[in-house]
Image (tube, one colour):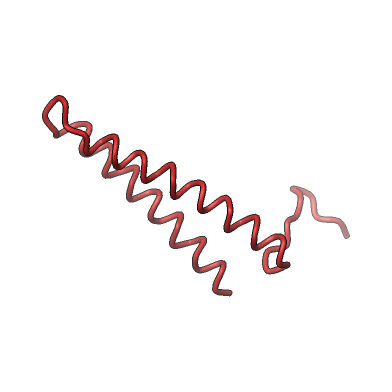
Length: 71
């Protein structure tokens, strides 16, 4: 259950970082590095989310399934 909560929090942090990157892109002065920093955080968080999902699958907490479940 803890890993699922961490995955949800990571996803929300990714969305927040993406939104802040857009805000900085639209409102900062030319040459400011806040946009690049926000988008770099998003990349790092996305990698962390991918690793958390793989750990969840490897540990059996998350059960992968296809589009059509087997009956």
